[in-house]
Image (cartoon, rainbow, N blue to C red; front, side, top):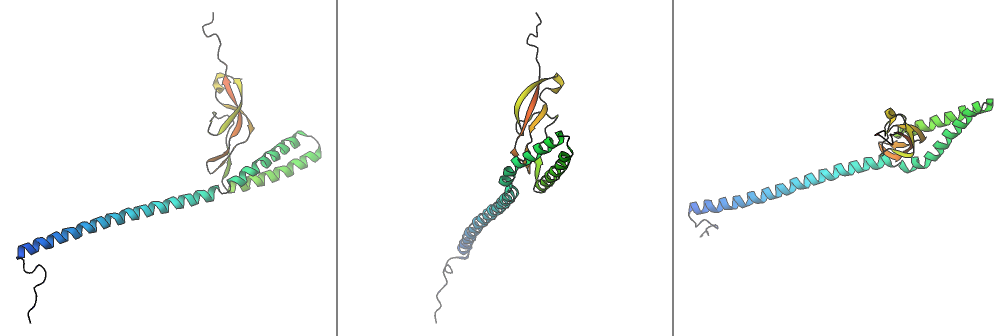
Length: 181
């Protein structure tokens, strides 16, 4: 029986080596392209996983924002009721004040557990990112730009502003005639 030569066997050995090297180079190039594509795909997937994890965590943290915002007027009213009860000297007012204070404290503790905090105001410098100026009053130069009164408390949820604090800001009086003539 006559055996047919395999493809490329009839070529001289150095041509055969060149053909094999060219085939190897092509396969190596295909491998590198596939490897690069796989690495990009893995990086894209890792970024997607991190992004969805971050979005899920943010959604979980801020899911309560609408409920908290809806509760804030009630919280304000409890504070007003407590202030009014403290102004009345009747013995029954003291008992009402104590009850309102307990409810207010429990509500604030519950809100604190979900990440709600009060915006700090008194004696601090006015910050338009957290405070809303409702009035400006004349103050000594040392208190220029400082908050002198809180009109309505502001609240944060995990560092996100839910409601700015409404405040009165101090502004130093400036001499209208600095030349003095």
